[in-house]
Image (cartoon, rainbow, N blue to C red):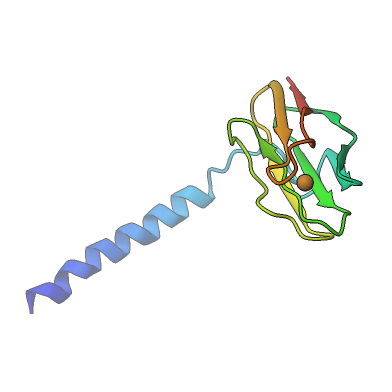
Length: 118
Ligand SMILES: [Cu+2]
């Protein structure tokens, strides 16, 4: 008997939490699905090897090779995982800086960078 009464206040709290979250969203990028820069992974290279964006914008990588590749930041800030042919990966950068990344599968695919400015 007592157990059923416990769940009601929890349910009411959950509804209130959901409502208060949706009304107070920070809008950094009004359309995060549109990347500010795109990088092709082609012929075992990142092209272009350096892209420059602003904080809050995103970069999209697309693998154009038949071999799988990754786009992996050196300290694992982002990691696409293994991308098959024509698969894409996007990442949004919130902090200015220079981010160096490589492909985990092919060691010669190194020293590509994303430059994020304020
Ligand atoms: Cu690779």
